Length: 180
Image 1: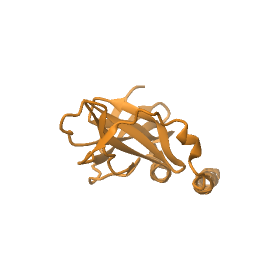
Image 2: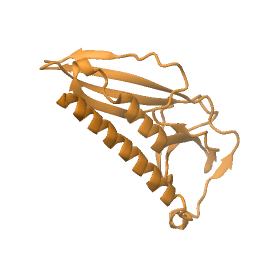
Image 3: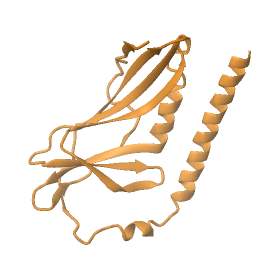
């Protein structure tokens, strides 16, 4: 009985977090963005067509068995894209409910992977609250990518992909490693 009450309380807390996050995002969306103007450098790169394309996002789960019938699990979200002609590197930008992050992450690889959900719980509960945690990320966070070229040029930004969302059918490739 207590376990059911605890699960209901956890679910209600997660719902409240999502609700407050949505309200906070709406309040911040009325900001005119003037604070970002100071962060923009005078040496803007030239933007060329077309944008990065062929974006594919997937989820993969990793589960580790623990003592006392417990498991520790993580769900990873991966975004990959087609190679861009003459690209030296790629830049990713986080897109939050509050707007676009001024910080760019640069990398040479054509895939980006982050942990989107994790928990430790009874093995019998499976991946407890996985879908709810992923839903929170889908609402709050996305990424877009562009190619970095020679001569201070960059491609247009790709479309934004929500963290936790997938573009291909989920095969749920669970990896289990037993470390007692």
